[in-house]
Image (cartoon, rainbow, N blue to C red; front, side, top):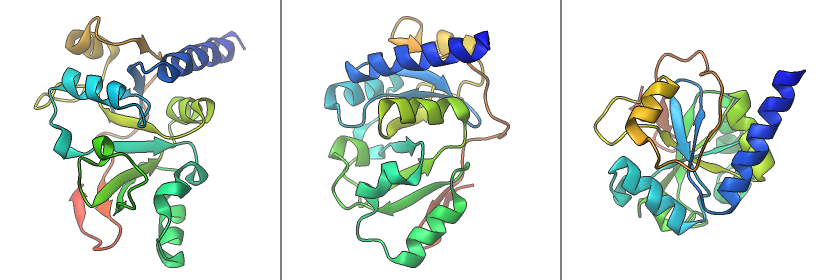
Length: 189
């Protein structure tokens, strides 16, 4: 019971940080992730600077359930929505057509947006408590291997993070596959 209270306290504290434009680290399905409020240009800019990542690459949004992603799914057909629903929650990221609800600092100016309904309990709890989707990108500087331990997160980012949510990684061996919803192309396997 104490562990559950500890986890909820950490989620609540992390949400407070997210609500003030902070950048956090948290465990995901396969690797540690960095996250922030996708609608905070300042927070996303900070996260990109920490990773030494260019704006044009685009970022993934994760959510607790598909309802949190509905604004980004407007314009999809019923069969396309069903395809998403049948794969989530789970370790599958989809590129969907950019309907321009997501800010350009999230899409990188691309014509697609990367979305996932996570099945990792901590990441889901973060999105649920935050009340919407979060940026989710691997916790590593661009070109380095993703952090698979809290030690590696600290080695990469030391004091740059505003909060670290403790927890264990999921059972996936590698970052989630990314597939294009319209073309069916696998972008990352």
